[in-house]
Length: 206
Image 1: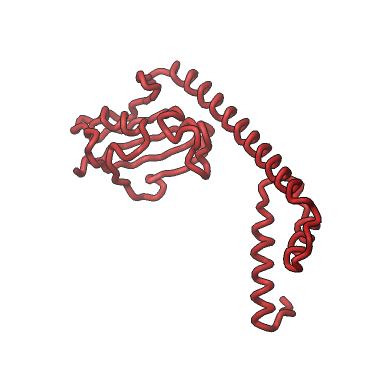
Image 2: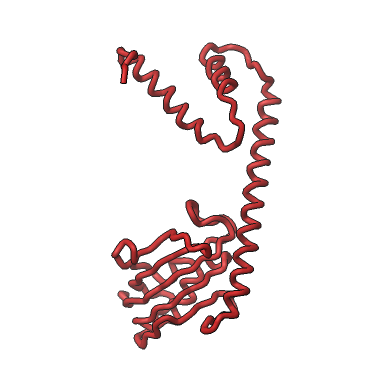
């Protein structure tokens, strides 16, 4: 690597430009125009007049935001439809119980221990996936059980845990409204996502 920037100011200036460039590679719309962006950067540094009227810039921002929101809405609608179709078919399988809330579960191991209440704190092992099998969280993979209050997790878990005796292992099929809802939880869990959890209730700790 040839370092042609030898002064502290040059290196810091390059660092600022590089950070801006790295950020712009993640521009949230297609057909990002590097030349136009560079021209705007240079004009701003020079204090030059806008080459594009402010009203037109704001209109362009608004149009892109509306386009991105439309794409998000389409994706959410697709995920919601896929989840609903999955649950309809899943409910037909042997051993799957459907509760009034819409939560579905399948008993893998039936424990005979005490059942937690809404205010209990429990220790569990769990493995969470999307309906396509994508793993988004797993205490099993981490090799470390998790402790949390029964009323401090998603609604599907809160409902299921109070039906499970210690020693039980259930597979939960959680519709979006009992999981992370219309917004999702970021990362792998998108809006309207139906989730699958294998949950083993190890103990009631409080």
